[in-house]
Image 1 (spheres, rainbow, N blue to C red):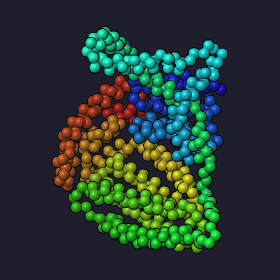
Image 2 (image 1 turned 90 degrees about the horizontal axis):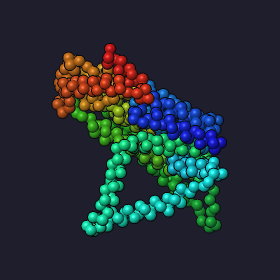
Image 3 (image 1 turned 45 degrees about the vertical axis):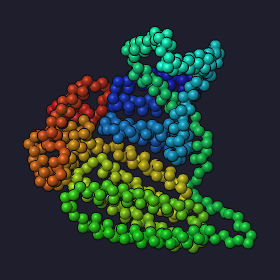
Image 4 (image 1 turned 135 degrees about the vertical axis):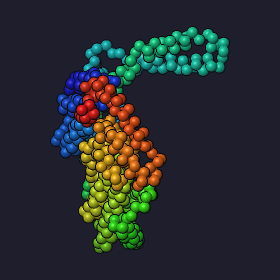
Length: 499
């Protein structure tokens, strides 16, 4: 098995610069994902009997495919995150919580580098031992310290500087030659490939972190406390009464907010030409923060024995109403975002808010299940971490740049067109970004009439010039790209622009 692991590490290290050296991300990332999964299977580290491992493996392959299909930065980021999760789940197949497997993955990134030394030591036990670290301590470390003091003395003493000048000039000439004739970028790519190969195929699970996951449970258990004779245990009852008062007051408070939002935001909102920054940006962030604090309050009061208190139905019902009202508040935030999109078009952050609110609604539901079925905080982390991962994979499925461009131009008569933002979108959207000057002039004329602050941004002429330059640069650069950098979205854009 040690020989098999060593061969896999060497092969992947050798193939890594072939895939990535001097290349941008594209088909090479999909091939790297296949190499990693194949290597894990060959070294018996890919346990598909584990449900979490199956989910992460499937998510890794899916996102790698999305990288090639969409060519988006989001797909690349989610795929790298999937590989990070995969490195943890393959070390701890019994893991149930992404939070703990992520910690194992992080620790393994550093500990796995030492595993290569122990692996090669075991394979070369019959050969002449060569104590590398002893040699480093014996020669290189003292030499480095001596050079440091020579530099300090050289700076402080002009006479000494004259004595050692030729020596330091020789060192400078050596490094000048080295960086001129040696491809440092290639060396660094090889080293990074070696580090990643160790990370995926060597190393072991961290027993302490794995123990935390194994000892955790979804189900909450009652913790019985000893009562000292002569004293009444009133702490839990007082906490229960405090919770009743708090949830009752909070429900009344949020009811007022929800009634205002339903009346004003849902059914009677009217835009009067302002930016809507406070309406959406500041207000949305505050409302989202209040929802997260609300969930934390619910988790705090239902963290322990209050779940097992007799006749606690009133508190549970108040908590359910509280969670329900927070769900309504979440919908209100979504409707604010809807109005923002309606008048100011699509953008990354506005799309992100939609997905974040979906995750928030799911989190509210899991807190409800926690209270109803007496679940632990571990259960919440496990469910919500997996939900967030699934949501990220869903987001990576779409080519958002193209969606944004097509939506924004199709709603140019009702919503603000931010030419500066559109001009910054990826090359994959260039066929949809390119408009004739006649079309842009009509859009610009309408925008100036409807949006008085339009003068602060790019004009249609400036936008057309910028897209024209980008188009020429893209057509030239795409022809010069290697097959490792290929992606379907870029190929489609190239064909559309050359038709």
